[in-house]
Image (cartoon, rainbow, N blue to C red; front, side, top):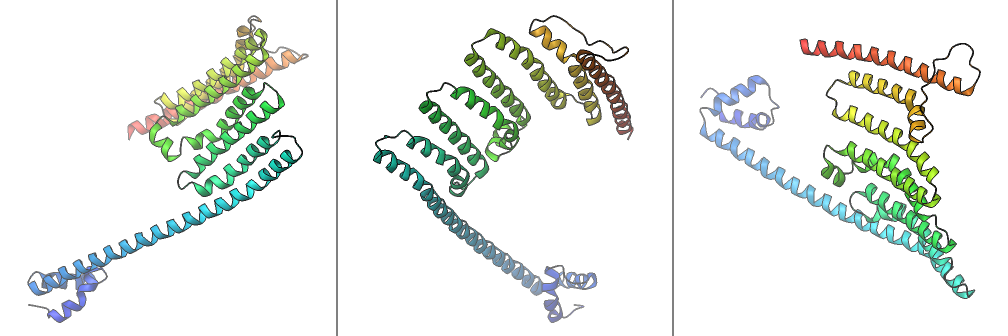
Length: 328
C-alpha cells in the first residue's frame, strides 16, 4: 500500500467532515480501496457520528418540549392572574348593586364589558395555537355580547343594525388575515380571495337588510339597492378579472383600469336607472362649466378619457411583453 494506516487514520476525521484538501481526500480514497481495516474504521466512525447526532437531536427535542410546557404553564398562570384582576370590578359592581337594592341592572353590562379586554389579553395567553385567530373571534363575540346586553337594558331595537355593521366593518381589514390563518387556509386552499370577497358581500348585504327592516321604508330599500348593485358588481368584476383572466399582469391591469373608468363614468347613470329616476348619460362639457351637474359630467369624461388612454398604454406594454416572452 502507498500510504501508512496511521497516516490515513489521522486523516479520516477530516475526510469524513470534508475538511481536508483534495490531494489528502484522494490519498484516503486510494488507501481505502486497498485496506479493509481503515474502511471498517471509517464505517465505525460514521455509525458513531450518526448515534451522537441522534442523541443530540433527542436531547434537543426534549429540551424544546420542556421549555414549551414551562412557557405554557407561565402563560396560563399569567392569564389566570389577569382574569382574576378583571373580576375585581365585576365583584365591586355586584356588591354595590345588591347593597343599594338596585338588583343586577348594571352588573351584566360591566360583566360583558370585561369580556373585551379579557379577549385581547387573556385569550392570547391561554390559547396554545392560532392565537391571532382565536383572539379576533373572542373579541368579536365579546363585542356582540356587550351590544346585546346594552340593547336589552336600554330597551332598544338597534342590536341587529349595530351587530351587522360591526361584522361588516371588522371583515374589511381582518378577513385577509383570517383566510391566511393555518386552519382556515388549509380548508380554503386556492379559494381564499373568493372567501374574502364573498364575506364582504354577505356582511354588507346583511347590514343593509337589517337597516332596511328597521327603516321599514320602500324608498330606502330602493335607493340602497340602486347604490349597492353597481358597487358590488364592480367589486366582483375586479375579482373575476384578477382571478380568472389568463393574461399577464399588465394586460390584467389594462382591463381593470378600463372597466374602472367605465364604472366611474356610468355609475350615476346606473344608479338613476335602478332607483327609477330615468336615464341620463353624462354630457361632454362645452363652454363654461356653470353648474355642479356640468362639473360632475366633466370629471366623468376626464376619468373616462384618461382611463382609456392609460389602459391602452398598459395593454400595449402587456402585448409587447407577452410577445417577447413567447419568442424566447
